[in-house]
Length: 581
Image 1 (cartoon, rainbow, N blue to C red):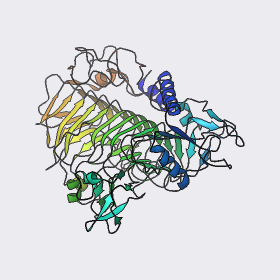
Image 2 (cartoon, helix red, strand yellow; image 1 turned 60 degrees about the horizontal axis):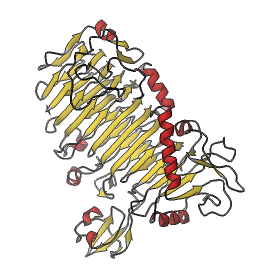
Image 3 (cartoon, rainbow, N blue to C red; image 1 turned 30 degrees about the vertical axis):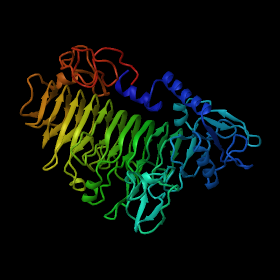
Image 4 (tube, rainbow, N blue to C red; image 1 turned 180 degrees about the vertical axis):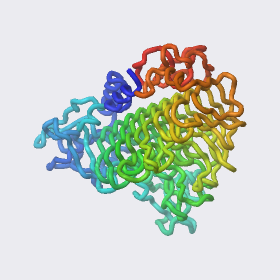
């Protein structure tokens, strides 16, 4: 199976696991939802009594429904099932709604909104049956609950959803984390008050111990799964600790973006910015697909770039521990706006992006943008095993595949990069390949670029690690085809060796093991670059000559690299070429 076929198959199967593994995964989640906690049901066509039970489902999640849901959450987990299909078991259920999550309970119990698992097969005497399709097929083929939005939003919650404000000791405070008031979090006084309040605002009620205060902007312990989201303004926005976003399909959003948004912690986007939410941690976005959006496919907000520099620096890094895996983003920005695939803003730490397919990005957008750190601290950013390819080449911008570069005016007050690993990625047919670069006053440090394959990048460099870089390592990369230079490696601050290339390689201190190939040799080193099959050929010069590294041991396909037997590039020689990605 060549690379193009492999990703085509994954696109049809939610870019996730093989079919057997996926079905097991879905059934485990399904069983857990049934066996634990309380279940509520939503059937948008139900006209009878509405209490959220199977026999009397909600018709819509209005305020009375949310009051009951939040009361129940105080005692255990809650799952809300939306009828995926109409009673015939075939026709998709669809509504022009903004399914706005209104969680107020601040406990650790999980709230799950599920648009896949069940459907009501009888509109006069409700009978809820399991969805007959496995979830990966259902999401892409009209067998989950479809949301077309209210004109500006479709699923999640937003920065304007609201906060409680209080007056205390002559000052006004904004609630940035839902909680029960106590001496520990008393505004301006308690030992940990800054975890729950930010001092700003113009009015509020008097603070009172024992009162439950709310931050709708940040909602924790929520799972959103199994929805199709499409329509003119059908975008989604979320933030909160322990979030799970899975098996959701966003497509054909035409008037507002981005398709999926992780909110900033401040508002508004101007010199008047104030903190409205505590940073979020432990967020998982997996098994999802985003196609043909207005603006970015996936926008990772953290530090607000429109806030004053002093404000950005004083608040420091924001969201942390974010995992994005098993996904496809196809033609972001196709309907207008900026076309980044994943636009990561400054102030995110412990970010992992892996097992993704990003294609058709353009409109002055890049495949993946990585944000700076506010301070000189290890960011722990990992970008691995992604296929980033076929940018639009629409002459509206650089269209870099993986972009980590300091020097932008909005982030001039921040430190720069510290701790970014980019490995086992394949980049093909883009305007610029992989860039990890600093600028005057803003360094790019501790960058590790290992075992990537970069093909046919033009008109810019295939690989650039240069300009105020230090403590960086560039090894085992294969860069060929496209425009010269193939690589631009800083003369100092970078250890670069065991790479392979054709054409021009600018590196004053390149190690002695790097291979300079002819165009013919480079093309013959892989099975078929034109069809994007980058497995090394049988007699490839890339085979078994490369440096074995100690901090990872797999290739693009997650196959093991044998110690002492590694090859240059993202794909290891031999093994099962159709291995599960």
